[in-house]
Length: 185
Image 1 (cartoon, rainbow, N blue to C red):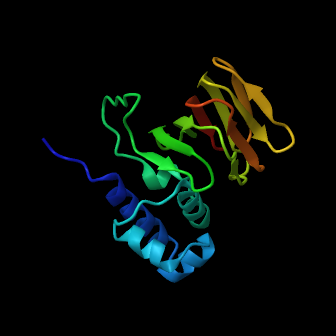
Image 2: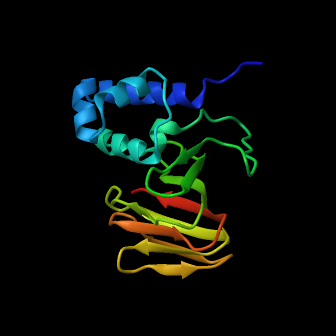
C-alpha cells in the first residue's frame, strides 16, 4: 500500500511549482499576495497551517484557482465522510471549508462542504471574472450573497450568485452546513 503525501506537502509543492512557473522569487510572490515572506517560506517548506485567506491571496497572486494549490491526487473511487477531509479555517470568522472535489482539466467546477458558526460574517473579495457560486443549505440558517443583495436560506434551499463581486456568508444558527459548488469560466 502506498501512502500519499500529506496535504501540507502537496500544498508546498503546488505553491513552489506555480511560483516557479511565473518566474517569481519568494519575496515577489509574498509581496503580490500581501503576506509575510517568512509565511511563504514556511509554506513552501511544508511547515505551518495556512488560513483560507492566505491560500486565496496566494492563488490570486499566482493567477490560479485555490483548488490548484490544495487538490489531492484523484483516485478511481473517492469517499469523504462527513467529518473527514482537510478543513481550511478562516482568520476572519468561525468558518471552515473542506474541499470535496476539484475539476478535471477542461471542466470548470469545484465542490466544497462548509460548516459555519454564528458570529462575524465571512466576507470574500471578488473571485476571477465569471465565477458563480451555487449553494445548497443542508442544516441551520444562513444569510449570503453579493453585498447589497443578501438572501436568507433555510435547510434544503438553493441559491446561486455572481462571486466576481464582494460577497458574504453569515451563519444564523450553530453548525450551519452547506454544500457549495463554484463554477469558473
